[in-house]
Amino acid sequence: MNWSKLQNDFKKIAIPIIAISLYILLGNAILGKICPMRMLFGIPCPGCGTTRAFLLLMQGKVAEAAISNPLWIPIVVLGAVFFINRYFVTSEKTSAKITRILKGMMMVVGVLCIAYYVYRMIYWYPNREPMIYDTNNLLQRLGIIKN
Image (cartoon, rainbow, N blue to C red; front, side, top):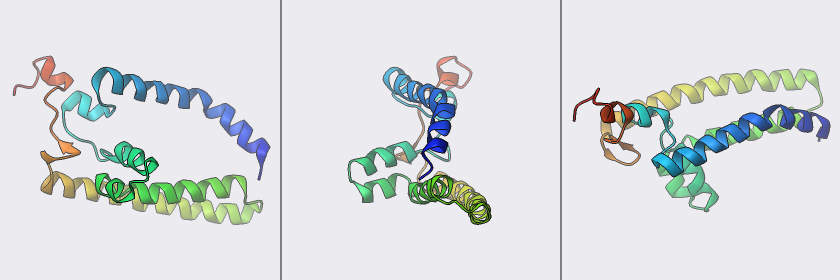
């Protein structure tokens, strides 16, 4: 394992990780949600349910996580492949190949995310978690959107 690369990467991303963690903690503590789209407009975003899925996964509730948002599965796989490629693969040629494959897989996951979002908006919205309309959104509180 390339420990020096891991240490350098951690130094580069430490502040953004702390900032994102604070955003999640404060958003959840103050507003009860962390999704900017839901906070502003009241509608779920394409990634809605992903945080819940990861929390359920950490509790060992794999089936519930898959129901909340099954796209956590390719996200975990892509993250693992990225980690292995970044810190364990020593051949630059092999690493470049894996990087190209990862980019392609990320595009596929992006398309799947949008397709799954459209499916959930058609069949789940606004009556099934996590695809519910949040009436406590900023635009409604400001009177820009009427109920």
